[in-house]
Length: 435
Image 1 (cartoon, rainbow, N blue to C red):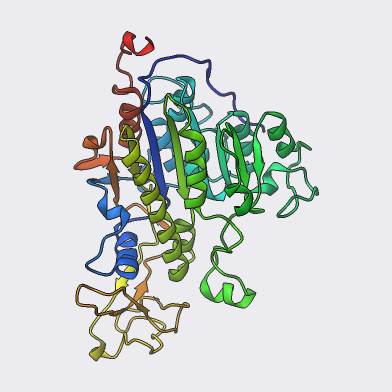
Image 2: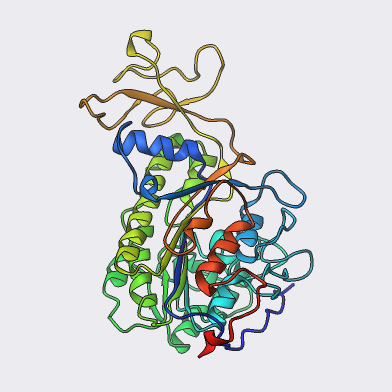
């Protein structure tokens, strides 16, 4: 089955000019994830870029038929502002949802219709739902080649991530691997014909010339990371993030160079997918690197906002993946001691423990505290699943005053809508906005 018909994207001037939104989605990050990164990267007395965002609220992640979301239902709620069933990818049953605005369009498609430049960045393959749900609607998440077709045909100004294989015909060799499409279409060639500059490497991304208006980046056959457990990576001689691929921060900088040239503003959705995938494989070292990369994106977005104050920076996940916990105690207890291999499980309760290279390896060391002391810690896991626990929303810029208290997942759409259009979803349009 092919995808569904998309809504009316005919241009309409209905938004105040010059406002922009950068929505950063570090997938699967709950409060424990950020606490883990803070201790490791900044120390127990330090601050992350995430910590410095001034607005904060908790977030209820449930779906219409489930207390815990899926990535595709979570992405759909962010894109449309309404509850959907858990197995939804830009759809509500057999139809595209009617968004909170009353339109059968995602907020990104409304932004594009209003003349804003739009873009998506993902460290995973480009059919990942945290970004793709803003531009694609399909009956099943597994319809990855159809999803990327819709991404390209949306004419979004920026599309950056992995998944080259999804853009090429089956058996056709690309820069990173072999194509998987059954329809015979070469979307890379179609992108070039449509006016996209197409890049495949970190070096090509850095060399994109000023004045580029449409940019497609395909930086891996599938994902730009290897989301396996530490032991599996070690056996295969792999690392979590190969150095050949650009980081999500480098992709974000490139996206902003293109999108920020639009005088009417833009909407950019950025997803670090590895925060979820390394959590679900219970790989603490991979997770820490993914979190560091996500925090770098926040710093990049905040630097952009400092120079362009009419920009909302909004940060939220849709679930708490695998719920990592920092496990630490005085070294005199003999369980978590620097340079001493950890037990496979925490004595007394059986929780699996991770050290720097997985189970049975030495503990991590925190960055120095204010007294210059570095203390050891391990990471324990609750599960291999995305949970229904509340997550944290952080924000700065226009409409960030709405980020307070206890939010529902549908409220993220509302906050972005107010920032972009200057009114609540469904409120009458100010006729002066088109002047």
